[in-house]
Image 1 (cartoon, chains in turn orange, purple):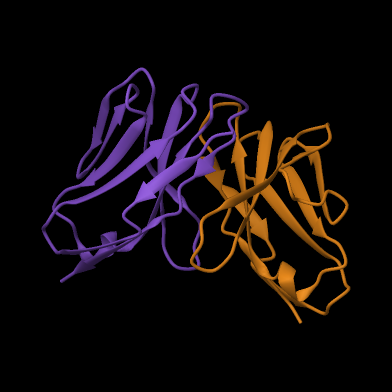
Image 2 (tube, rainbow over the protein chains, first blue to last red):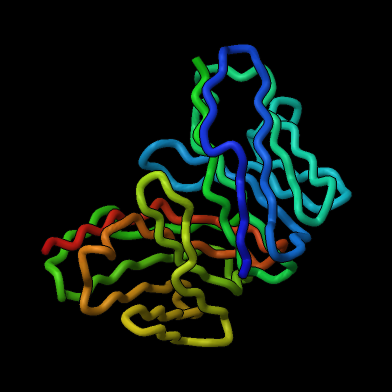
Length: 114
Length: 112
């Protein structure tokens, strides 16, 4: 139980393009989803908290217009990196919670911006 | 907001030895303290967690202790095996919204 999937697992794009990453809870309803970014050999940094049907809450320093988050259903949240640049290259990981405090992580998406 | 400090940043042990990783947190409202294991390029996997109403929790070779007065918690791995080698992260929830603040991680290497 408590399986979270992410798609794609890796993506390479050109600078200036937009990339969409999907996060799905496969066997439970996720009232809250979280988006993290992890640079090599560093910890997980929370970018935003996403609740189904409402606007995402972004952490300080995270540009909401650059990192668009949509949580349209209890099983799906999407992160769109708009006008991506090389400095956005990172490992993006989502997690999902079923209303309790435990977070279950997706497998991550490695984004490389050329 | 919550601040989590984790030590050591690297830890090397011989197979069969014990490993201890320590974390401190700043927000006394924190109630939930999970530990995650992350292998290179993989997702963080929850290995054990503890809540503020408990002082210690054990699951086979893994145990976690919590001292709310001192605001620190520790991960103990006994009889380490090479497959325990990974980066371990502690986290605390800051007492609200289930947001987790992570420590910087500990790279554990278990030498055969």
